[in-house]
Image (cartoon, rainbow, N blue to C red; front, side, top):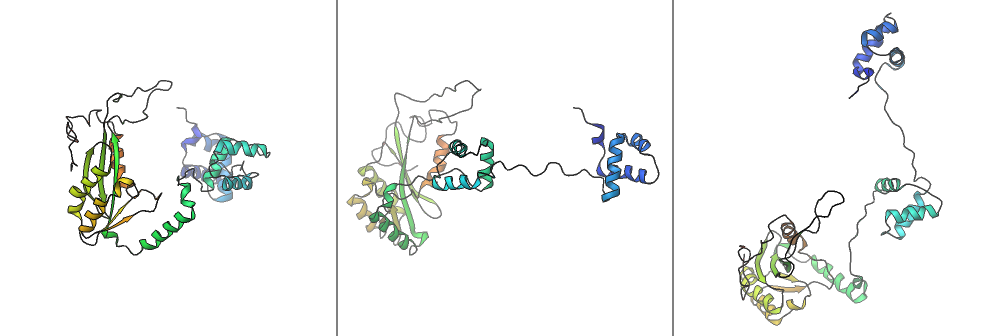
Amino acid sequence: MNIHKNARLTPLRREEMAEAVLSGETVRRSAEVFRVSVASAVTWTQRYRATGSAAAKPMGGRRHDAMAAGRDDALARLAEHPSLALRALQADLAERGVRVRHGAIWHFVHAEGLSFKKSALARETLRPDLARTRERWRKHQGQMDPSRLVFLDETWVKTNMAPLRGWAPLGERLAGRHPHGHWRTLTFLAALRADRIDAPCLFGGPINGESFTAGVDHALIPTLSPGDVVVMDNLGSHKGQAVRAAIRAAGAHLLFLPPYSPDPCGAKNSPLDCFLHAPHPSNRFSPSSSTVSARPPAGPRTP
């Protein structure tokens, strides 16, 4: 790598050279001693005489704001259509006479503190009857003791689940191998408390009213204490009379979330999702695996 000879001098050495010139040494002789060009020696000496420092000036300057003319229009369009992609915004601004590069728009939205993200919510939550139900639930939340809340929910996996993407050389496809013709569905049921995951159990097959009732009887009920509040979503298999009776017999209360509520157990399932998408052998759910037996048990199995 070639380094310009003038780059060897630190600010301190530049000042030493300037002081030598100001002390009576010729500029040419000082340039030879410090091994810099005569022009640099003159510039640094003049700067040192004027400012008291021979350090380099800050590089760069104020960058031209390409979005200055279209800033208000861009913010108005994003407020009107928050899902507008940057390419679409670029085309929209071009129709208004503001022609900017895609990179300029990218820097603009980040400088304005914007990020491209969205939470998909059910449109049905805007119905007046559901809005009233959700509002009543919010008011009731403040009266609950978080330590007594028990969120009960399930998630499922299939033995043919595999990572959807992987790294490969540019222009080549990565071939992923996973079971295609024969696979199984497993259901994981557990309760989420404020400080732990409770009552975990595993089923071979999808959830239904019978298996959910068995999970409640064998796994959940032994962990409940009088005064606990069990919260579930509105899945049909959760609303059996046997489930209601078993929870109330344990001295606990049963509440159902309003329709279209967010999943309160999403964070509970995140470690499981990470495990499933990790590069484990494809037979981790095979009959020889410790996760599930060769024949699905008739009732729930506690891990």
